[in-house]
Amino acid sequence: MFNFFADENAKQNSQYIINGADYNHIKNVLRMNIGDTCLISCGGKSDLCEIIAFYEDAVCLSVIEENYNDTELPVKIYLFQGLPKGDKMEYIIQKCVELGVFAVVPVEMKHCVVKLDDKKAKSKQARWQSISESAAKQSKRNIIPEIMSVCSFTKALEFAKSLDLIMVPYENKNGMQATVDALGSLKTAKSVGIFIGPEGGFEEKEIEKTLSSNAKIISLGKRILRTETAAITAVSMCMLEIEKGNIE
Image (cartoon, rainbow, N blue to C red; front, side, top):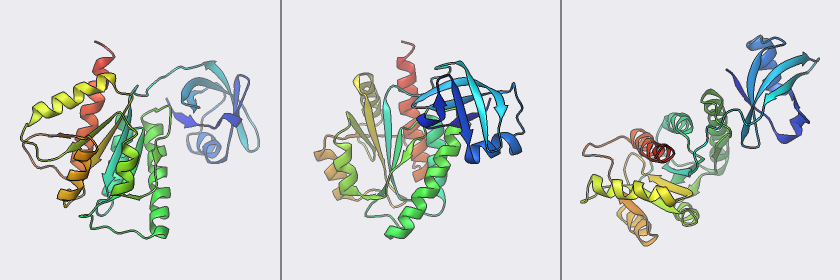
């Protein structure tokens, strides 16, 4: 079943009026017809809807069932990703949105090879946001995770201090036990920040700053992971622990 996003202005009583790119996609790309159903996500909720009419530049859908599909995690996961090389950031965003992140914060760290000026950073952010939207549609999310502005490590950490839990995959003498303990803290958390270093890893001073902010240093196993693998693995671990809590 296809999923589309709409702002609250598109909903009138028990109907949605969809225009613009989504209208074109529904009518001319997917070639959907009157009577076909799809999901419309609006305001963090998804409604099951049926197409009831096509207009010159819009399609009208009637709500069959409200709050039909809730796919959001009860804990908000913020991914603080050190800027990687090439198109790795696009891959990280796509997969982590599928896994349930609430937002992604691109972070300039000491060992980042990539350096973006303001113009390039804004262009990248717009591109990354479109990838987030596509991934949210594909995975039937209720929201489109925000890809926030590129920021410094200091600003990222300052923002993360407002979260209930900060986790940093790094060399850890306590091994996986530290990870198990940190994941256990998700039972009482409403928000968590995960910091992932770039290809060159974290600088020692960056780790010292996270420790002074009460971050929990965790392990992702004995193997060395690429930055994109580390992001997906850490988010997956959190997602599993959070989802597991729903059945205990």
